[in-house]
Length: 204
Image (cartoon, rainbow, N blue to C red; front, side, top):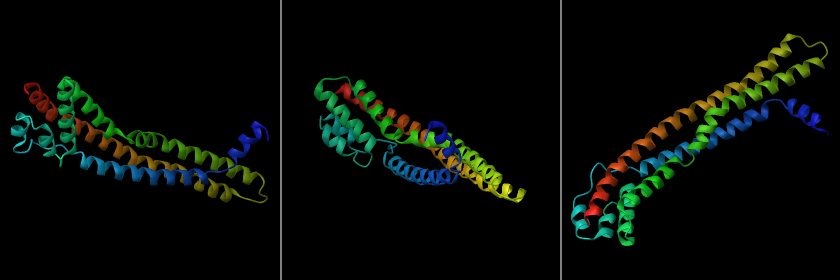
């Protein structure tokens, strides 16, 4: 089969497979959203350092001080980074920047999938509609005695793909915007805590 034949076969495939693809993508996106919400809830930032933290840190008990932050992974990771920076003779500010960059990468994982799906699902649905319309008119051309009802039925079925594409895109766009803003807030909060830790490390 030549290239033109492949294009024609694709055009006559209809939009049913597009709907199935979009439904599968919606299931994956739902899983990504749930996973990200769980991660974001775990990567919370405490409003203040716990009691006794400053005392242990100033006493040089950095590991014990970091352990006190076990309920708040972001602060614990930053404190551990500061401890390693002190042991290696590195700048606490460099350790803070590296810790914040790693935190941002952790929060941004799989957000690209939601953004891409949210932006392109309507176009994929439109592709399914176009393929469905092409097949509807093709079937009409070879259907003897078929009236406009046959075309209307084919068109209505083809438009389902566009509707599904929009329905898949909306939750992805909403979730992406919310998660991206939540990531900005968490990184900003982590930066505030990290600056305090860096100041303590410089005084150590």
